Image (cartoon, rainbow, N blue to C red; front, side, top):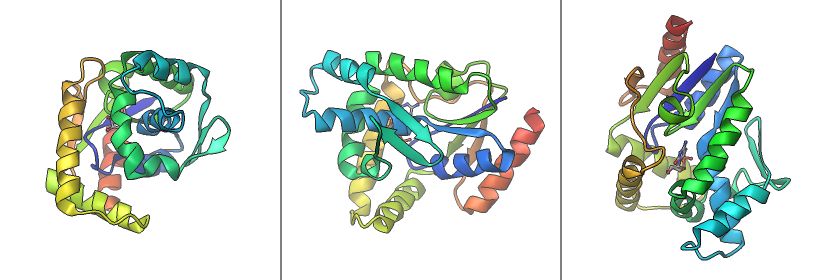
Length: 215
Ligand code: C5P
């Protein structure tokens, strides 16, 4: 069974999806982490972002492994490194690169093959797994999402302005929605969950119920 969870930045998808996978005994795939890892590759190689073919080449020769909650890039644990503001800002170059998307979508389908999985991102229910048995669109108001992101970054020791995060988030949302390949969109048959005012535990319980009804 494939459960897709799509939605905008900061809707709390990663942590809830991970917990949902654990509760169901399913594998978990954080596809945003893959785009972040490719951005980190580009940053480290100091590539010219206008050279889109170079980033595709780097992606083809890299190994990205997602094991449990850790992310390994060419064998190195980059779990923390891919969450910095610098990488978040550069991820657009990976996400907007059609060749990179092609590579990562292929990897995502290979990972999901033959196992029960909760997969989380922007295009999972629409483009990557259009036949998924259960599709969820998880969202929250822009302010609520920005508040969560500020506190997440603070917990990691990065101090940021709420207003700045809100603006960056709105730019990211627009870019995610306007993208020609794999844009953020609610799949026609996805169930929308608006998480404003809900605790993570309440969201988790709601998702468990939704998946129960899909089975
Ligand atoms: O979910 P997360 O914030 O970690 O994703 C980082 C970025 O990767 C997003 O802003 C989005 O642009 C991109 N992304 C994507 N397609 C996915 C998952 C993430 O384009 N399936």
